[in-house]
Amino acid sequence: MSKLLIANWKMQLSRKEALSLAKKLKARAKKCPAKMVICPDFLSLQPVSASLKNSAIELGAQDCASSNRGALTGEISPFDLRSLGVKYVILGHSERREKLGENEALISAKIKAALANRLTPIVCVGENLAEKEAGKAKSVLVGQLRAALKNVKIKSANDLIIAYEPLWAIGTGQAIIPAEAEIVGNFLTVEAAKILQKRVRVIYGGSVDSQNASQFLRQKHLAGLLVGGASLKEDFYKLCC
Ligand code: PGA
Image (cartoon, rainbow, N blue to C red; front, side):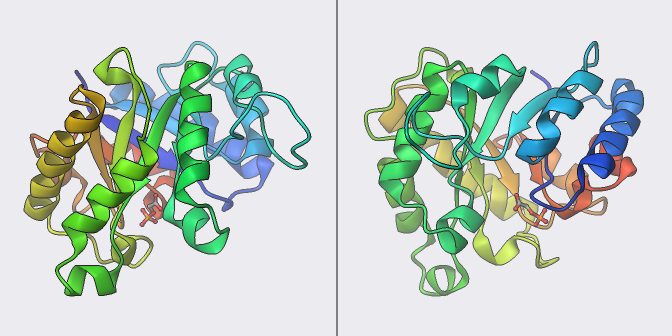
């Protein structure tokens, strides 16, 4: 199976910029041996979805609501995302956990709602610097996995993806050493399998760039990359070349 190269555009681009970048990447996608997934912000999803028709690039959202309909002011229904052609959804990103106060119960409910709508959740987990320095990374990761995946049922190993994103590596220019990410990738695969009874894919995210991407993509237990800053440029596709 080809590796995943997932762009998390966060709230960094205007609609015009997002559409323009999507069109450029569409033209480049054939040169990329990995499966490219673009996650624009909600307002850009519709125009980007239309522009990606007949391309190899797939679409992801950066979040979704925990139910399809309801009195949930400001939320975006996973049913409507699916109707728009969205196939993946990033859930539990550390920026939402830390800055927007998302808790484990909500993240878990969102994962279930996404799966019920045939969206593939990309479930983010990661330790912060203090936890890493205290030698608690593994226990933090297991705690996050157990909380997020509680009572989650998947039919196939492809139905869910775990993104290992150490908080200290996100947007800092200081990525983890690829060999260390590989060890964590293996660890998370095993721990997630204990909960889900399936060996789901684990990807890495945090300061991935043109210098280090190929080293991460070479690792056996890393099925791909979740990329923020380096996904905002046309040469994003080169990360997998
Ligand atoms: P970064 O972001 O590549 O800019 O570190 C990754 C992410 O937040 O998913």
